Image 1 (cartoon, rainbow, N blue to C red):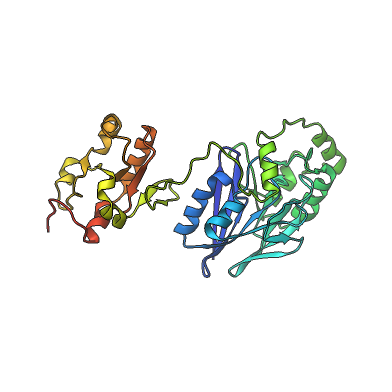
Image 2: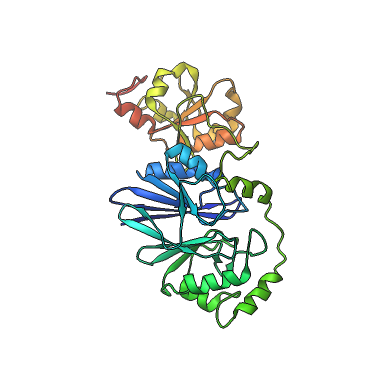
Length: 357
């Protein structure tokens, strides 16, 4: 069976797609975003997948790819079109080539026009295709820079995408209106730029008169993406926490494991966000934990200090995860949730105060 996830970056309105094989647990990631690498790696880890490839559909101008950073983090290989002009990839894809993951594969279809090196990726059973910036939902990618060519784009869509089955689902690299998926049949009928009876001259005239401003990230994104995202300079990016071996979850929460906490208890402030009756209840409490119920945490956060990291704890780890969000909003940067809460702490036989047998 196929694992499929559609992910979204709000800043650049970019869709990233994860496809995995349930049997062999191998996966590929299409059009990753640099700022979302932590999120994507967490999802891949939680689903128990091994990322074989990141595939960029083209050299993006509106965001920096996460390909290089994912290669460094999880050991995936970088794949991009052989005509992209990018340096530093592990695999340069040709038209018709297969990119395999487990027993499944994507077939590369050259779809130039938005840029000279655009590709689309078609799933083996032709039930879905990933069109990058070539074909958008009721739109297309622009053609006014990076070797763009409106006539080449028109032909690419009609010859390489519209020849797929009408019920083939199409997933673009971007959408700016909250739309997530379309189909070949829909776009052939309703795309206002090149659907219906519109001809190549109609499309070329339409694209010539778009007069769009250049993407805001153009001067940063294109040079970085021509090196597959190699070490882009981003002064606003926060470093990975280094005060403890933390795990980042797909839910966006930093977690800490019980063993480290037990061994370094004096190095942190431990905040228990359960209710008072739970704090005195059968699960007990971790020694020196400070009780601040979740409903009171926003008001009482000022009682905590910034000189030591904070670890939050509750019964099972749900309320304490929300507590980390509250504390970060209050200006505390070194915050982590105790994974599994007191249930896991108790199940592992770790020391507690005031617990019932």
